[in-house]
Amino acid sequence: MPPLISDPATLLIWAALGYLLGSIPFGVLISRAFGLGDLRKVGSGNIGATNVLRTGSKPAAALTLLLDGGKGAVAVLLARTLAAEDAAQLAGLMAFLGHCFPVWLGFKGGKGVATFLGLMLALSWPVGLACCATWLVAAALTRISSMGALVAAASSTLWMVVLSDGRAFLLGIALTLLVFWRHKDNIARLRAGTEPRIGQKT
Image: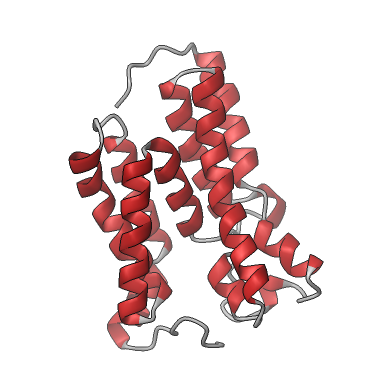
């Protein structure tokens, strides 16, 4: 982990800003803007890009993926530029939690996959690219988005050891555990063989 050099007030400010950035429900906003209705009443009810894809709009799903990833990256990069690495990692963690538990939606948010990948790219771009590639390969082979997410999250700490200086290793472990926890229902369906495939309506 990075040296703790920021004062408590600075860390608190970036924690709040990270959460607020992460809590922007882009999937819900984009679905409404595209005239797709309330995303929470579609498919799985999740607010992420995979569920947006179930509406049949690939452009809306792609835009949701980019913005959900972008908000995590922006939180890290802003804090790193204006404060320090400790504030950047805290802002990133809080952006992930903001996506999963947005105050605007009664703390019922997404599973954080795109935000996780955006965070990885901002924390260390080689690690982020490796995680994105891992997700793409796993998802392409299985045609199951959640499998791609779980494999990418599980591999992230390995990529940190191999491709970075390891300063974000503890954060990577925390994010991996959170991704798996948010996917507990998906894991149960994977074990039962009932997990929907990419593009399949539920």
